[in-house]
Amino acid sequence: MVKIAITGKGGVGKTTVAGTLARMLAQDGYDVLAIDADADMNLASALGIEHPPRPLTDYKELIQERAGVESGIFKINPKVDDIVENFGVVGPDGVKMLVMGTIERGGSGCMCPASAFLRAFLRHVVLKDSSAVILDMEAGIEHLGRGTTRGIDLMIIVVEPGMRSIETAARIKKLSGEIGIKYLAAVVNKGTSAQVGQYLEDLGIPLLGEIPYDAELVRADLEGIAPIDTGGDTVAAMKVIRDRMLDMISAEI
Image (cartoon, rainbow, N blue to C red; front, side, top):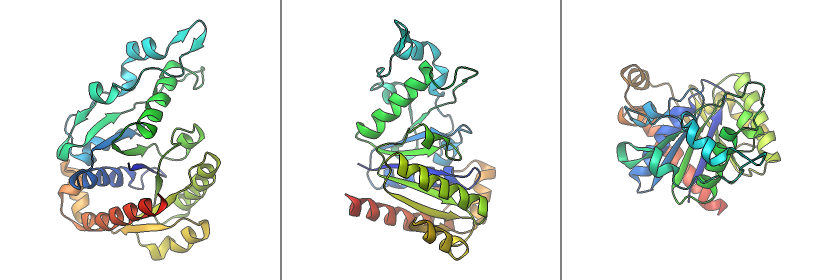
């Protein structure tokens, strides 16, 4: 089954890509689970979901019950196989959606029940859930350092013309190799492959396609319309990206 993580520098259009791919796969007949793992939590609007689910980190009593300290040790394998059914919502085209939420670490670092719970949940959906999973990751590369994306089929790095975006892609490439993610690809947004293609080639990151500037996408964002429902140039470009993505995953398998 298809397991995809979408990442990149903040503001490059990760959520647009994630939401549109999720809807397209659902329209193709896949059972799709879209997970908002970004602190900004905007995936619902990109999917066309008016009322997103509460972040999982809001369920503090549940997390404490399932992943809290027991005899001085955190429960590293809490029960998570019922989370999608009980805490997700179903949106357009039947896409199931969950929001991870953010962890208030304070001075405790990342070793806390919430962190253990979210790690276990991600492991479950990536390694055991039968759905096609689309992860809209937080900006940058911190999630890779935690190793939460082990087991995915493909990591898509969204880039835009600009050296900071390319530098982020380079760091993602390095860290992904360190945690065993073999397959990466890039999508160029707000520009053309001619502007950044050589940089991606030098990094050894294949290009899935490019999303041109689209006035309809700007209008959709202002009016709260999911990108896929605009019918603009973004949709046509994303269809090409979807097809190339599926071809790449099939070739890997």
